[in-house]
Length: 177
Image (cartoon, rainbow, N blue to C red; front, side, top):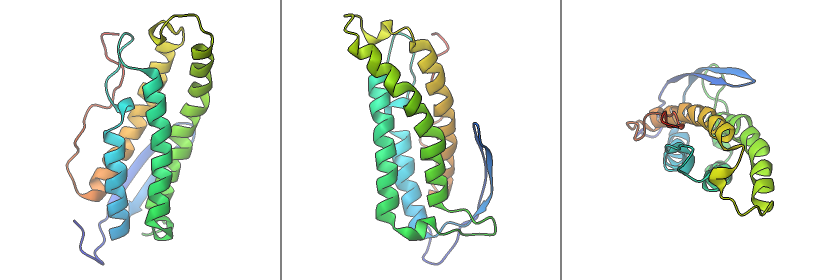
């Protein structure tokens, strides 16, 4: 763990779809290191970061978990206080900036597109299960792309927290699907 007052330099080069990249060196303080650990644990223990196939896994559970991750990320920022949003290092990055970019540029577009579509399917009352959802394959492909992005953030947060990565392959769609 980081000693009080000691800064850890973290270089990053995140590619965010539709936006480009976030690049630079970040010097997280002790509060950011603790919050990064909390975010890391939340990311690597979520259902959407597990392996899915067309015949396994629940889109509803994945959606609920993603929404919960959004709420949890916001909560971690609130509890950590404004210091985590204050830019540090010459590129003026912060945990707050990186977390908000993860929430607004990765999670929000996914939830905005897929939540209403899944709700419509669920409310049709066809008696067919979600494995029969005509959009399931496209949903899983989109989930796979989001998973890769979240994996990059998880890797960054693990580096900041100075812990080995507890999860690995971020390709969500099982090749047998």
